[in-house]
Image 1: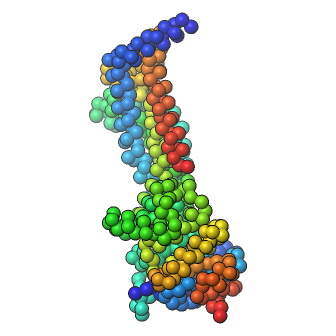
Image 2: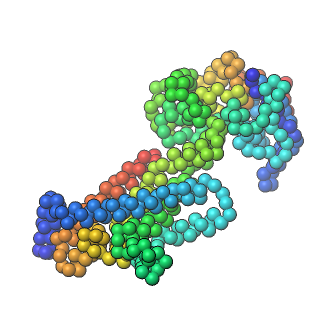
Length: 230
Length: 218
């Protein structure tokens, strides 16, 4: 119990003292996860719109695959990206393994199905009378799609935030492809795992508190967007 | 020149039910047409077909400006409007809901503001223009639907049961709005209703849907 209290005390000083190592780790975590989320959203939103607003063959199959991929185990994604980026892999020549770029790729793959599926759900959840109202007011098919996307905006934001929550808390994939190299690929979750192994609880706890704080903020945002749906 | 609507030999059926078989009618410009008939006779279907929201299985919906037949395209669709029983309000302010049709048509900000303000005044919703439209009562929502359609100045306005789910006070407000439109000869109104008294109060022509055919009542 004493070690936990001491750990909390030390963590408090690290946070208040704006420890440089701590800040570097937090900044890299936000950079990697933020970038992964941005890239996955850029690809996920158009696909979600296509799946939610149009009809085409094999649509149901594609939606089922996406929903299945939501539960992708991070270590499997890590292994897959590792094999692709390793020296003998098809993209080995890029030399991306054990770099933040490899971590971004892995997290993008993890975030994509979550963002896409949740945005798709938000779009198909819009009452069909909205489409009819837009059409009856003279909207072109493109303008009808925009009206539906605008109506689903809070659900879409919830999907994006949920994707961010997933990648921020993820450890398995980035540990495999990033290697947890100090000052280069060490992020909050991998540091917590490493420092706990070493018995160095101060930094692990400090990062844990910050990670929880970020999680709390994400959930507040999510709650706010869900409330805005009315 | 105001649009005129003609339906020729309309056939429409749903699984297990034939709604229209060879239904034809010519709606002259201006005035109020009331569509009456029992539940499920096809009033809403006919309005949706006429408003180009649904296609008939067979037959033709044609619009004329004078003697000239209009091509059915987005431009023509923007000259008519349909207010559904479920209005389909957008999750934004009352003002933005009413402004939507004008924004689609690329109107200037000043024009939008003045027309929307006028439309909201017309339906007595000016005091709620900054309120979220989803918080309106059913009567107010119906008036919002009317304002949203009227602001785009449709030449033919289709109304599907405009007073079905509203109280007496809102029914009177809506009927007065329709009388004003009729007086100004701004649009032809084609509305479905269950209310026989309302038909007498408002309509210039009464059409009964009877066993898949349209019958003009004297």
